[in-house]
Length: 299
Figure 1 (cartoon, one colour):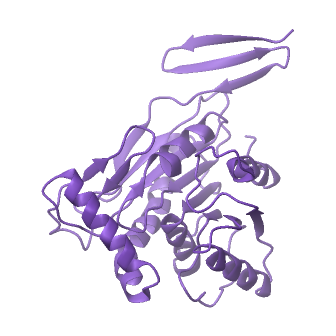
Figure 2 (cartoon, one colour):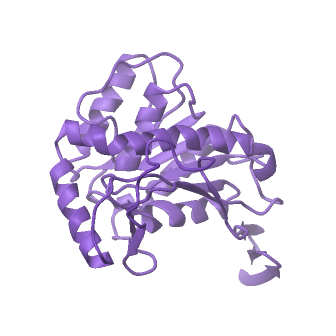
């Protein structure tokens, strides 16, 4: 009979399932660092204070002007040397920091993969309290949907932070016990726009990329040579992101690449780590299997 034991290991704990000889190692206390030395370039004069709303597990962060990386580092005994930078979504006016950020990073760290949450800069909205800021952010989100010029204006700081995130993660590779050539950039919705832009438009390529329910906004730019392996996922009933994902997939295939695409029958937009009793609940398992096929789940 299988029995479960919990073992305390100081800052690290593990659950051992006796009989299957399986160990689930949980991450050490996360490490947070600023993404840029000093003020982030281009937003030095931003003064609106960062605001968080919502209960734990469903928080939204707005008015980010000081971008950060929060690294959930796995138990060294089970570490694979792989890192996944996680860029949450939220239309560049807020970040769904738990379901599309910290919850993803923790899941990965428990499986030996460093999960690194990117808190990137957002379009600044005004308000004297959290309720006013949320109201202004909601209005801004409605305005940007389908508006290319607004999206370009809103997204440029997040994209710059995505490029910087790859560079800084590589700079910390030795300290964080990760391999500089095993860095994955994964993003959700607006974070997927960041991910695809970093992959297509910058020299700071991640080694692997995973835009989740998102891709290049509106038109797909010319596909360059030398792109990394790419994982895509979207739900069939996601009318907004579906066309972005399929256009990106088709463009990559036409350019000679072999992206992996998972289209779930339902799940809507923004499913993240939320459990809805749908097949999209298991996107992260499919992502892990893809990482396994890339030989990234073992040291």
